[in-house]
Length: 105
Image 1 (spheres, rainbow, N blue to C red):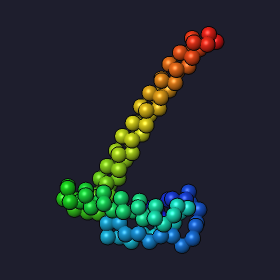
Image 2 (cartoon, helix red, strand yellow):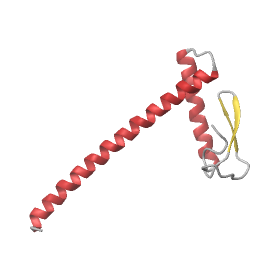
Image 3 (cartoon, rainbow, N blue to C red):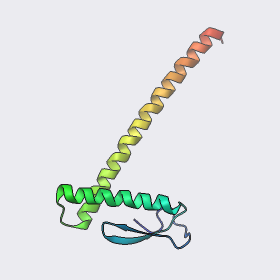
Image 4 (cartoon, one colour):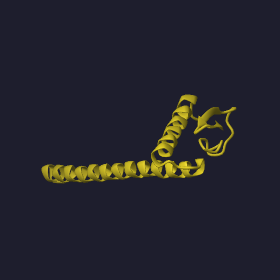
């Protein structure tokens, strides 16, 4: 994780030191320390899970597989949100149709 990845490249304070898969990083960003630590803990847990599950030999392979899995989680959630948005939009349109018929607008 790049030091400036959480604040669009702007320097902000001295950062938060985190450890991910045995490596220390200083993360600088506009988010609070607890949030940054939570993100780092999540990435670390994913990397450790992938390393054990797939018996990967290098940290780079572990990082790439973990990134792919995290991206998959993100894409699944985005798809669910898109489906919910579509369902809400469809129901809103039906409701508007019912109201326009009721009030003959």
